[in-house]
Image (cartoon, rainbow, N blue to C red; front, side, top):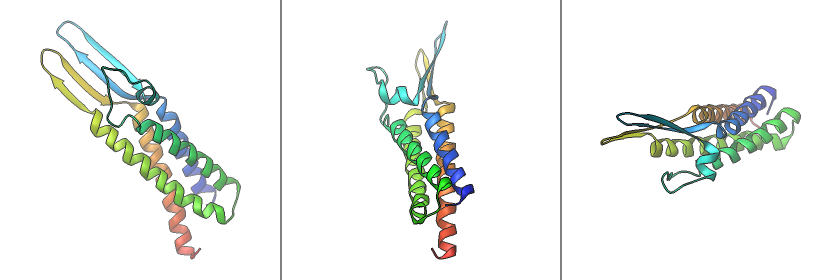
Length: 155
């Protein structure tokens, strides 16, 4: 893994980690006389479930945090060292980025929606979710560039 690919993976991992602590779910309750907006960070989605708000894929932020942390570590190793071990790092980062993106997709399908009766409830994803998705995409790109480069070189 050379410096550019390691930097891409490192930045992707940092975005995934930071994104977990920003808004992942925003719920808007629009009643006749009042409107309320509630925001939940990815960490709160995972760590603080309550009886009113349950997430089918509430573990997605934890998986994203773990994948992002490992991507940061492997990206840093890829920047600092050039050895046979860093060749494996690219493949691992690729897998971590893909796994994280898949879990975030499942979370998205579970969370986004709208329900109306007398009160309108709207649930959307927030900036932290999008930041984590961007980080997973960057980690995936950094990993795939490394794997593709090693395959072309025959390493």
